[in-house]
Length: 145
View 1 (tube, one colour):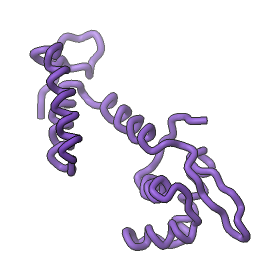
View 2 (view 1 turned 60 degrees about the vertical axis):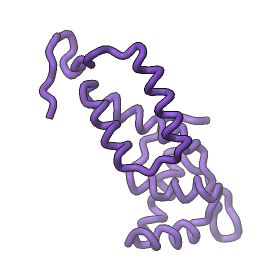
View 3 (view 1 turned 120 degrees about the horizontal axis):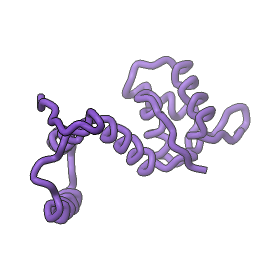
View 4 (view 1 turned 180 degrees about the horizontal axis):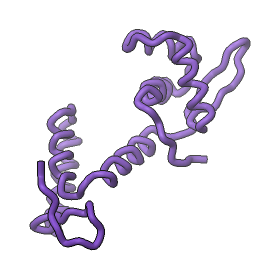
């Protein structure tokens, strides 16, 4: 059963490994994470336990240890996190924020082609200016910073 799950930045690091591998032991997660971050094994095990408690991972006993398997899909979880972020910011700043994100990430040529197609389609019905949505019921424009 898939539900919206709040995942902390540290938990994202764990989930990215398990999503990539499909399943993993705590030993594998610890080994891979310690190549990236300076976390103690107990910290990583705590993150795994929290993700199990949240319903993001399931455990299957294997000998004395566990195999961790994702219960939430990676793309759906990323989409929900992005939706949450963009629903929390002023609509007047969405374009600038997207521009910032696009400037800072690596995109394939196919990604760029798909974005250009989508943007061309959205431009057909886009308003001249996006209104501020920070104060409900007021027709004001917030200050762009």
